[in-house]
Image (cartoon, rainbow, N blue to C red; front, side):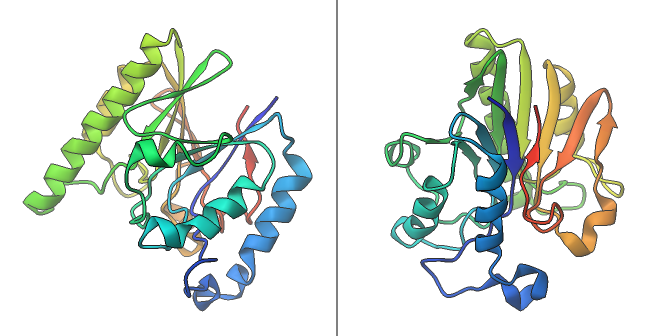
Length: 226
């Protein structure tokens, strides 16, 4: 059993928003993801998906995308991205498929690790009051998720955040401070895309390993985390 990750799938099988408007590298990217995924991932493996799953606005529009992911190998663990407007009742989402788990104020146990996470938000320096409220709510959700993992007896954590808490040009201090107070070993993140890939931090920062898993940056090929 191995642990993989990918983010920013941006599927649109139930809506008319093809990603190739952003360049040829996105042409039929869901087919490329499926081939790479099933070539390396078995039914016993677990895949972390760090947000921006579907362009759908409503759950019924997202179902073709979720069904496509359901039919891929392995167990799938999700957090919400900034474009996942279809993400509604967490109870309903977690009732859809037995191989898909959606994290919201909760965690998922993988061997002796707790998988935690939340969407996160933009760095609030200079942002409007609206952004600050969302930012603080996301801080609370991450804390609740990590606390849940500790309550389950997990003393090693892997965190998924859609928004990176640190890049080469910005830092989200409250997220970084919170992460540093828990036994976090790795942070999986997305949101950044290929043309901005140079700002990504991939490697150790403040004793935590950061891994960008945006689909176009990793060539639509899930990366092995453990």
